[in-house]
Image (cartoon, rainbow, N blue to C red; front, side, top):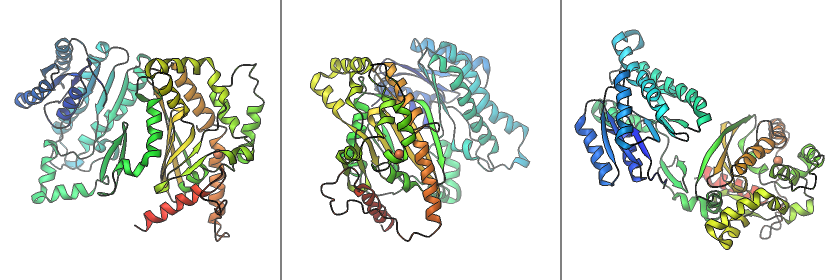
Length: 498
Ligand SMILES: [Fe+2]
């Protein structure tokens, strides 16, 4: 659970729907909440009662936020009532429920929706930004209508699309003050706003809308959200299994404060090849020494002047381990196609002043033996089949998004370990730039080779792809054994055959 003890939040449109749920969750996490509403006092009172039941400060703030003066007053009241403000959730809005084609849209409806859903966002943010402390948070609520449009609701969709652009602009503006500005775009949610379309044709409307939502189930592990398209099936913890769970555990446990935050932006790389090639590649210990030759040579030219090497250098250089060393590395093929490979970093990294300082912080929090346990978790990669790579040692997760049978996108995310020296995060960013970003001297070569393999396979000259290396010794697999790849394909065949 996120701990927001002592924080103060203003949730606009907090009387009902998503706003009420947000206000109550903030209170559950420990925050005091100001609940904004326009005219429906009784509903706002109900939210406030819920917050008070959780023994958190709660105040109601009335006002029509489409009026700049009223928006300014509302923000002032929230700040004065709570004694400060760290979190601003701009959630209010209207959804004119009649289906109106653009050709018939009146000026009154267009102007009214813009005023309620967009002008008001500016007014609230403009008033609140000077009052938020550095490191504060702003969350704006958009809608999937703002991403993909909504026929016969162009006014609503246009305002919600604008909120996304507004968020992106503001996020950069406020970055120097470390104020995170984010946007959520919920799809259909069963609130009062959806009542009319849900009720269409005696309830058929809801059935039709539910059919358009692919997500069957949602579950989380250590704060990571997972979705499943299947309505039924095994639960998340069973699906991950203990060895994959331990990779997420270690990613979070490495933060001295026990919490990590996604930070540093995101890398996206698209290549023209099937996603399975990267799954195989990431556990293939035979290729680094050959494919990454130029990166290894570049690393060999770096002078360290007697100092311990940087982590990004070490990861690049580790591609050049000898075949014997790669074969000595531990690999594991797990149920459901998951797998992992051991760490390839040299222990010299641990001798750097930064690592020593970090270790001392962990020892102060956890004591020697628990710290050793956390730091001894030595894996390069844990692969959550079929689309996630967890690198807890360098605080990185990569996700594969298949675009088509011969096109894949890799999305890379980095994390800041709360309570760790800021230089750790800087090292993570440097590591990603060198090893896994579009400008990296390592992954770019992998992507290039995926495209060549795809082209070669598309030629149709090869009846089979040979993944038999080590097949005679699956129980005691050496590092370069292709067991994890066979394991992936077995899992895939099982999924495909039900
Ligand atoms: Fe590679």
